[in-house]
Length: 283
Ligand code: AMP
Image 1: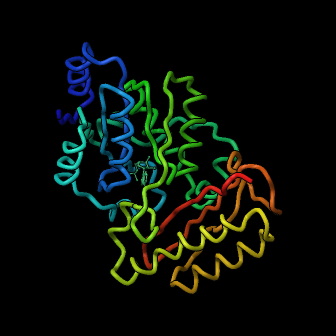
Image 2 (image 1 turned 60 degrees about the vertical axis):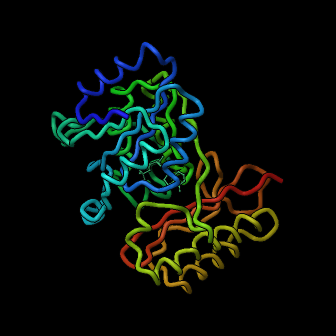
């Protein structure tokens, strides 16, 4: 496994490997890796001969400065995990490498209503930052396949919109969410939960599960209200949203429908903001 820290070193590493590889799969991450990330690398490994993983905590996607400062970092352990699952190249760029002209006055991506709902509404500027870093990484790595997690469902939609806008020749593979045995979605931010908060955190999965299970036959407003009280009873506060939405538009669903739906939530447990989603089974 090659570890590179600059774009020019990445180019050299890829040139060394490329004569023998036809398909490159790329997995962008912010590190503090867990089995959910490794699931993405496994999927990449199955699809492509060359697997590139980046670790970069991208400053432009943090709308909350404290969240950026406290974001967990475990680079040595990450490297060992990536080696064990057969990664070919790990790219660890610096902020200067990704933003040589600085982070002010960056291009604005037209994301339409995706930027105004759910995460877009509660984390202003977040998705512009995601587009900034993913577009730059895609231009540097030039993969045929981009592997991302459905845990960040709206992020997948945003990145697809950015790919379409820039007409990049890359296909996106979305990997289902990997969960802990009790159902909690794996997340780097789970490391910041206290033991008591970790026990309480499963309430988000359980609330989403009851919404998704009943979405086709019970009144939506009733389901959403019940889910919100489940979260509050478990100790969550500042519920940004816990809703049933159309899976293709992320707009609210007001009555049981037959189209694709998603139960989706974001809320704080102590100082940690957790997000998760579950698709509603097709009728
Ligand atoms: P992050 O390091 O949080 O930016 O995540 C990097 C990639 O891993 C993103 O595409 C995430 O959607 C994906 N990911 C994070 N958590 C999970 C999970 N529990 N299951 C599957 N993919 C995940």
